[in-house]
Length: 369
Image (tube, rainbow, N blue to C red):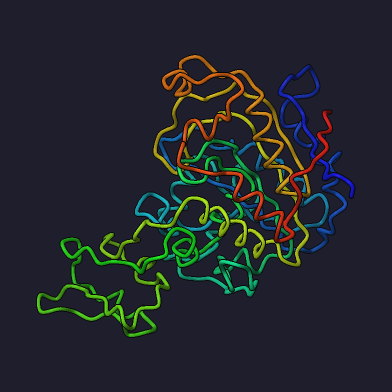
């Protein structure tokens, strides 16, 4: 069987060829124009960055991608889904404000920015996949309705999955709040009563009528009725309805792979990863630590599994940067950097499962431009 092709360009430039031009040349060489964009709603899935964290992909690259889609007849929109935790991106209004602060808006991108799962993170489609861990996947509606999926991924470390790349951006990133709950937890939500203000939003949103007020007008969950859908977490604006973070890292990685499978199911897709500012932790934090390796380049492929494997291999082959967390923890060259930083994670579990369910292949050919 032929290996999946992953195309790569370094970050060296010269007069007449800047990094935006190199990215465009890379994706064209990788075959992005083979996709039928004509009048197709094209979701460009990207992480807009938590304000304060400066490791996110610059909007200049996203604008170049949107322009390329439009030049090929497509209708691009830039998108991400709400976060499960309370923060600057936990609802559409705050999320859009955060995106604008980081330079993601119509003026800079030349396309619209949509929050895929709606105002409160509860707008999703349930896609049937019948996989080992998830029978259905709750995908943000704008992404579920898109005709073409392009992922633009900042490759970096991650405290739960080892690293974050294409699969993480697609799987966890495209899940609605209820979907994120399914990937992160095997337990049902809980109510932190000291935060509850008795607004009743969770009661109205619960389709199972599993939430009532107690004698102090605080929300209370009847776990005999609760199905763990996460709608209470989605609508609570006071962080009173909370996730129980108890899923094992390897299982989360496998669920992420299944959610990525749901996002791409039956749709043309293409993926590009930026191996720059390779911070040890997720872009969801409000700050980013020193990169663990020098900026390496940009990689692209039709196969998100091969792309992630190529990126992790290149980071592991690269020299560790002095002054990073790797130096703090006495890293020795040749050891897996992501497993060293996040010792309780198993990134291989996600890629192996993704390959098993037919999402892609870890066996790749790296083509350097």
